[in-house]
Length: 445
Length: 127
Image 1 (cartoon, each protein chain N blue to C red):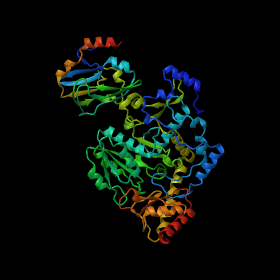
Image 2: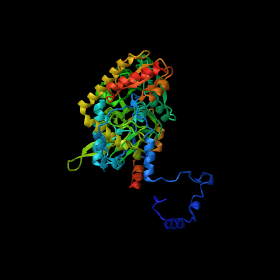
Image 3: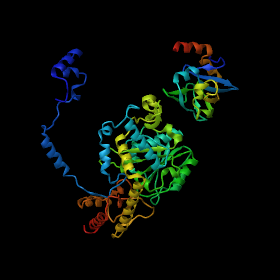
Image 4: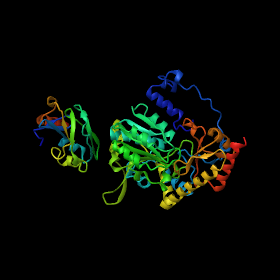
């Protein structure tokens, strides 16, 4: 094994020093049946052979035109995002473990935090979390710490994948969840009001919700606050270029998936979680936080701050077991946002919304398709089809499209519902071809 | 130096009984050991604690440490000035740096605590 640096002679010397005759002697405490008997691996390949093999595999990828969203979106990423974030100064020092070691990385994270605060309309944010689902879990736990309560209301318009993650993460933490079904595609004020009580730590919402519906949740925040409970919203950051920020809706904690900000779609990540809150809750917020300060000579500097609540100091009493952040993805987000600027971001968001409206009109011309119009939407909307949506999605793959998210996968009684996302990348021509393909799948079986 | 009208814990809290209610703080030794105090997470009013139960957390530039209740009781008031001036604990640990009042106490529990002379010896052993 050439990648193990020590030689046979050195190994013999080391074994002798610890009084073992052989490697097998060294591991004799491990029962034989648990030891590896041998690996059944094919012979090694040359570099050229490996390239051929990988290229053959990559050709099996279908280049589908993407109308699939469900929390992760096919947005355009300017080449400069890769060019800047792949610089070795950033790329090889992606997480600053030493508080003051890397001023450049710390400054980038500080800028990222500032951008997230402006987008969400909140006071403070941490240096990032793993993804939208874990960020929502951290928000739920934060709400229990702030209120000292253990009951959480969960709107069914929250991404079902995130809801599953919440249940999984909290399985052994005696937190009681109650799901509140949406009514006509929107958070049900009446049911929420009935379910809120003085034992409720938080009401968790998503905006736009999983069905694409955009909502002003200010009244729900008010309902929550009247019971001493927090309002938590999972947001779609790119949509915030156009929509009212959660901070203007009296929301207490905002989380979300940052993938839409310059991070490519990939199977499972790495993605980017963000969590922002009001200053009064900063000490209950998990994760690291970069602050700006001055050194002894009055020069500007950046430091990790509020470290005392983290696990290397507070051990088992730490706010969270998060001890790192998603710095490289956070860097992509801040580079993306800087390249677009305020104007650019709101333009991208507006184009997404307009193209989605165009697609709604085009798709509603197809016989048997109904576009749900109960709520305003951003770039994602719900269709009902005259047949099973999962089957339609399978058949659309053959026609070159990722047609959308079949809602029946997570919602009972919604087998014919398809969730369709349209980003700024989709052209009028692609929307037209998508509509034609959909029509042929539905009617020329 | 060490006030004689107080009772002391091995964790360096002090307690004083005023009209049947206990007022709690941390000692001068404790504030000195912690260094500049940056934040005090005071308990919620209404919280019930048993003796040695957790009352809150003090964060300093060096550490974050729990505050333990010298005697059991119910938190009836916390020091509002500590929110924006945690350094009061550094400046005046036995006075303006008080942390909270506990009601419904059992004065018999005071017997488990040290008086000033004992505490002085205890601290001397620490140094």
